[in-house]
Image 1 (cartoon, rainbow, N blue to C red):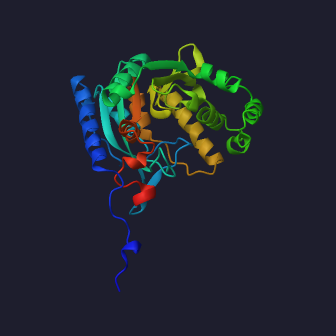
Image 2 (cartoon, rainbow, N blue to C red; image 1 turned 60 degrees about the horizontal axis):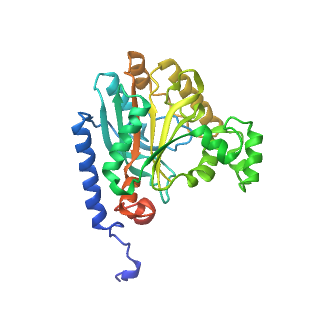
Image 3 (tube, rainbow, N blue to C red; image 1 turned 45 degrees about the vertical axis):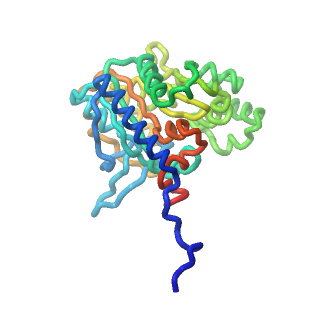
Length: 326
C-alpha cells in the first residue's frame, strides 16, 4: 500500500531561488573584493584531529576507524599556521560546525568568511569590515558607529563589567532578569554574555553598522591585550539591525600566553562536565616559530544574506536547514 502524500517527507528546499541567486552574487562580490586587495583565498581541512577548547562551544565529532576526528568550529588555527609559514594576508569561505546551535540565527552547519590582514591594527580591520559589508548590504547600511564595551555596559547595567558577581546578580534582578543567577552561576564570562545579549544588544542603533570594541579580557581567549590595559582585549564585534555579524581580534601571537589561556579553557570545560579535547600542538608550534602581527575576523555569511534579503531567520536563506528540512 502506498503512503498518502500527507505522510511523505517534504523534500523541497526551504529557501526560494532568489536566495540562491543572491548567495551566489554575495560570494562573487566577496571574492572580487579580496582579489582587488591582493588577499589570497585559501582552503584548510574541515575535519581534523584537534579542535578549539572554547568552553562555550560544542564541537561535533566523526568516528574514523579507531580515532575521533573533529568537524572544525572555525578554520582559525589552520589559517594561522599558514600565516606563520609566510602566506601573507589570506581569506577563506567555508562551512563551520557547532553542536547544539539551532534557531533563528543558528544552524549546526553554517557558512563562515574568515580573513587575516598582516600588519593591520584593529582600527584598520574595522575599516576593512565596514567596507566589505557596505559592498554587500549597500543601502541597508545607513552609517557607522564605534562604541566601547565598558561604557555600554555601565550605561545599561548600572555597574562596571568587573563588579563582583553578587552585584551583577543584584542588578540583573532589578532589571527583571531573575533567572540570570541560576543560568550564569559564578562564571563571569557567562554573566557578561547574558547581560550583553539581553540588555545591551537589543538597544544598539538599528540601521548603522555598530562596532563594539575594547572587550573585557575574559571574553577574548585569542586576542591580544591592549598595551597598558591588561583587563582590555583588542577585540570587536560588529552588529546591524541588532544582529551580530562578526567577531574580530588583533591576534595574540605569544605562544606561552596562548597555551596558558587554552589550559584555563580546558579546566573550565572539565569543571562544567564537558568533553575536554587535547591542545592543538601544531598551532602552538606555529606560534613558537613566529606568526606575523595581524588582525583577523570571522563573518557569518548566512546572517549577512538574511539581512540582505530582509528576512528575520537564516532558515529563510538556507536550502536545507537542520531544524526544518533535515
